[in-house]
Amino acid sequence: MKGVVMRVARACRDIDGLTRQYTRGLGMEVLSSWRDHEGFDGVVLGHAHAPWHLEFIHDRAAAPPPPPHEEQLLVFYLAEPDEWETRCATMLAAGFTVVQNGNPYWERNGRTFVDAEGGRTVLNRGAWPR
Image (tube, rainbow, N blue to C red):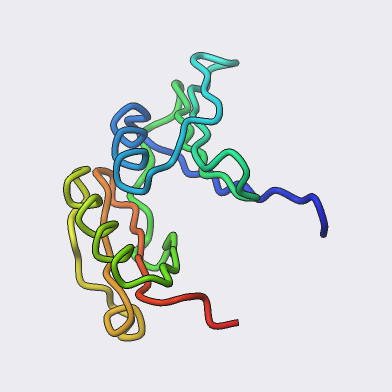
């Protein structure tokens, strides 16, 4: 699937707050944003040349979304130990909270963070093994 870009979208209550957390904590950039486009606000985060994006979307007419399930995870594999330590510290400084992951694999191999709306991100200690 050459040339494909993947976007993961998640409903949220506070786009500005999550934008601050993810740009500070994970070093993401705002790639696109909009306000009141047919009743929706949104922001697309990522890195300019990465083949993936993270979108937060807010439906102005809908009830607030429930928190994501604890097994809905964003997982980032960090090959360098120093980079992993630094990124963990920046996640805390950005307002993420460390939580225990119910899956022992993630507890052994990384650290799980939760954002202001309950979304979970795992920073895996080590490169993607495949």
